[in-house]
Amino acid sequence: MKIQLKFYGFILFLGLILPINSKAQLHLPNLFSDHMVLQRHLPIPVWGTASAGSEVVVRFEKVELKTQVDADGNWRVSFPARSEGGPFELSILGDGKSIVFKDILVGEVWLCSGQSNMEWSLKRTAEGEREIPNANNPNIRLFHLKKKHDMYKSPFTQEQLESFTAGDFFYPAKWEKCSPETAAVFSGVGYFFGKTLQDSLQIPIGLIQNAVGGSPIQSWISEEAFASHPQLNYFVKFREGGNWLDLENINPWLKERALQNWADWVNQEKSGELPGHPFAPTYLFESAIQPLQDYPLRGVIWYQGESNATNPENYAALFELMVKNWRQTWQLDLPFYFIQLPKIGTRNLWPEFREAQEKCLAIQNTGMVVAIDGGHPTNVHPKEKEGISQRLANLALAKTYGKMLLAESPMLSTFEWQKKDRQIVLNFKQTYGGLKISRGEVPTGFLLQGYLEQGSLEAFIIPEKIRIENEKIILNYPENFLPVNVKYAWAPAPDNNIVNSENLPLAPFKILLGGRD
Image (tube, rainbow, N blue to C red):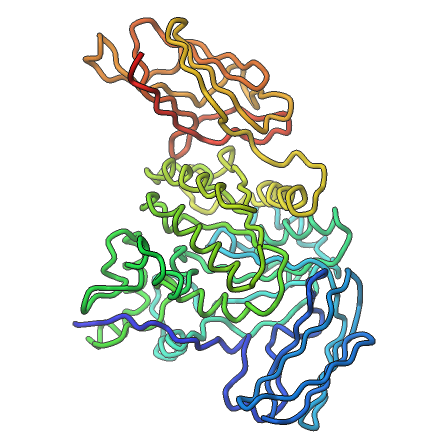
């Protein structure tokens, strides 16, 4: 069976953009609805379609703007930025039709994106049963893009194959007030993030969820961004007759699941273009990012990586490309706050992947939640979401909103190998007054890799002695041992217990010691 990749055109899903045949009448994207939240302190764009050459009148509060519809049936106006407030009304007149949106708030809008741990609904979290009955908060508004098919093994129907190939992957969405009913099915991480922001800022919060379980980061990046990157353009530039299923450095599970979803199409031995799939490079950028691009945001929270952890070597470059791509798409310097993968005992490359995630902090205006004190031994979906979500929100409150919060985990700063004293002195930043252990009586999580018997035998040992001295940790090793690497929490599910004064866990790290005196 010969198959080729289809590069998905700019075909936007029905929930956010307009059917082509609607351009003969006044129409707006579903991003505009009752209960929406508009981003404060940024210009407020309003756009849609109507009859070519006609006039559209848009009123927001006491400001009225008029514009002429262009030859393609598109129109757009932009209101001046304003501070938080509401409720307001937005009215649009055109083509003899009037549309009025009510109960509009102006506040802070955040995008909740990534894969299944961001998509994981509040009702499935460990805290959901307690939290859902109390989730009545009209100052939090939710815009939830829900998939038309879960990414399980079950095959797509013929209708879904056609729909998803056209980029129509989500159900139509609208803004809704946060209530027990709407919050229960919304992202648990997103909900707790938004709740913490709203409690602290006391202004309206809008949350947009477009996360897709299983999705790799390459699905969230545009074709143009890939094509312009000399080291990553292989994600869209294939050899003749090739396609994304042939890529060597992607998680094999992605190919396996796509073929399971396409089972009916594969069994018919069809050839030609591949059907659409959210795991394909660029797919979710085109169907879940581009349709949002004109709606101003404050920032992005991101929980993703499980589907890329088999190839940690290219993740930092992919993440940097995605951040640049999205910032260019919105024409905003969006902050990105993301969650480092927690513990799991069944994924052998997760230590290296966590290291790749930490490298992403070199990108300006980003922040990382260290979650190495949580997770599950075998389940890639830990149910405890409230704690890491509050850490995520505290990062935003400190770094974006200037709140005096000590929100970052301690990280290795510098080190010194004192060979004469057989000790390694580690210095840390973001300790906020000093390091401590969170449980037990001795520090855990350290491992030294090196050689015994004058370099003839490789060995892994626990340091002979571990001392915490405020912002330093001093490791001692035995006389007959030659250390090469120092590792902390460097295992899929490590036994680690060091935190800072705010009880935020020390980030995993690995040090390669020099080989000469």
